[in-house]
Image 1 (spheres, rainbow over the protein chains, first blue to last red):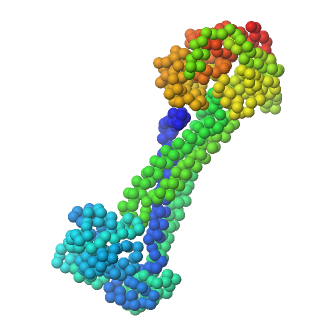
Image 2 (cartoon, rainbow over the protein chains, first blue to last red; image 1 turned 180 degrees about the vertical axis):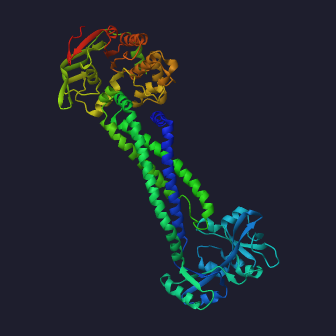
Image 3 (cartoon, each protein chain N blue to C red; image 1 turned 90 degrees about the horizontal axis):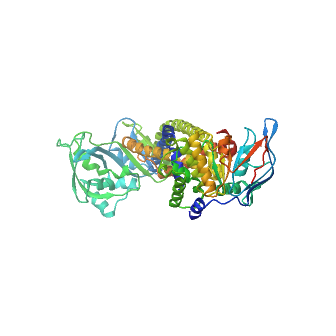
Length: 382
Length: 243
C-alpha cells in the first residue's frame, strides 16, 4: 500500500486520457456483462424445461377443453394440465401479476418443481374459488393463508359484468425456479370458466407429463393424430424442443452479438495496451530515476503492472456495474421470455479474472521497455 | 532517524580514509560498428568527506565516471570499491540494493516526479525501506527543512522555481543518509543566484555534515566551491586531485 500514492498519481496524471481509457474499458466490460446476462437468460430457459413434458397448442387459435380427457387417454401420457387466465392486479393497476386458471391436481402432477404442503393441497383441491400463490407475491402484498383477496382483471369480464375475482388463499407454494415463477396466482380453471362472460370452455394450451422422455416423438404424434380430422388441429412438441427452437431463433442473433462483442472487447484491449505503452514511453526518464534511486527491476515492473491492472480494474468494475443495472432494466421487458436474465455471480468472477489478465497483458507489453531500460542511458537522453 | 539527524548536524570532519577507489577502470561502448573508449585505465581515490569537482569538455568521460561511481553503469574492466564494497562485480539486484543504501543522486534537470508533491518526491527512496509512513514522513520533512523548504512540502514541482526544485532533488538525495552524493551539473540549469544557493547548500552538506560529494560541472565558478578539482579529457585524468 505504500506505493499507492505513486500509483494513483500516475493514473491521474493525464486525466482526460485516463477518462477515455476508463470509458473504453468500461464499455468493453459492460458489453461482456450484457452478453453474460443474455447467455445466463438463455441457459435459464433450458434449466426450467423438463424432458418429461410435452406441450399441445392449436395450430390456429385456442383449444377446446373437451380435448383434455382425450389427450389424457393417449397411451404414454401420465397426467395433463391446461392453462387459461388473465393479467390481474391488486388494489392498484401498477400491482400486476399473472392469474393462471388450471386444474389443480393435474398442474401439481405435471409441475413437480412447484412444491405445496399436503394441507394446502387438500384445501385447494376442494375449494373452487381457492387459489395458491408464489412466495414472492405473497410477501409483496402481505397475503396470509385463509385471506379473501379481491383480484381485479382489466380485460377479462365476468358474467355479472364485474372485473373483480374473489379468491381465498389456500396455500403458498415454493419453488427453486427463477423469481418470475414465484409471482403467479393459480386458480381453479372451473371457477374461471364458470365466471367468464366470453370464451368459455377454451384453453391456451395443454401440457402433458409423459412417463418416458424417449417416447416424446411417438406420443406427440399420437396426440396430434387423434385430432388430425378435428378443428382446430393440434401441434404437439416437447418442452425442450419448443425451447430449443426459441433459443435457435435467438441463437443466431446471439452468435452475431458474441462475435461483434468479442471484436469490440479486443479493440478496447488494444486501446488500453496502446495507452499504457504510450504512458510508459513518456515516463522513461522517470522510470530511470526510480532505478537510479535504487528501485529494482521487479519493483518498477510491479508498479507498471499495478497501474495497468488498476486501470482495467476500475474501468471493468464500472462496466460490470453498468451491465448489472442495464440487465435489471432490460429484465423488466423480457422477463416473460428470459426469466433468468441477469448477471450471474460466475460472470462477475470471470469478469474480475479478465480485468486482472487484461491488466497484466496491457502492462506486460510496455514492461519490455522497462526491462530494457538502462538508467544511465535513459538519464543521458533525458 | 537519529543516525540521519546526527550525520546531518555533526561538525564536518577533516578528510579521512579513502571512500572510493577506482583501479584501472576502462569503459568502452559500441557505437555503430565502432568501439569507443570513454574511460581509459583510470585510477582514482576519493577520500571520505571530500568535495570533488570533475571538470572537462563534453565527451571527456565525466558523466560516465559518475555513473560508474553510482553503480548505474558497469566498467568494461577494472575495479571500483566504495566504502569497502567492490561494486563492479555485484549482481544486478545486489547493486540496486547497494545503490539505494549508499548513493544520493542530484541531477542537472532535477528529475523530480511531476505527479508527486515535494514531500512525496523526497519520500521516494524511503519507500524501499521498512520505515512506517509516519517515520518516512518525518524523515522527508527533516530533509526538506535542511534544504530550507519545509514550507513547500505540499507543492508539486511545477509550482516551484528551478532553485527550489533542485533543493527538493538534494533533499531526496540526502534523505537516506547515503555514503556518497553524486551531482551531475547541479547548477547547470539555474541562474547564478539560484546556482550559488545550491552550491552553498552542497558546501554546507560537505563541511557541516561530512557528506562526501563528487560533482560534475562545466562551470569553473561551481568547481571553485569544491575542495578539489579534477580535470578530465578523452577519458583520462588530466590533473590528479591534490589533498
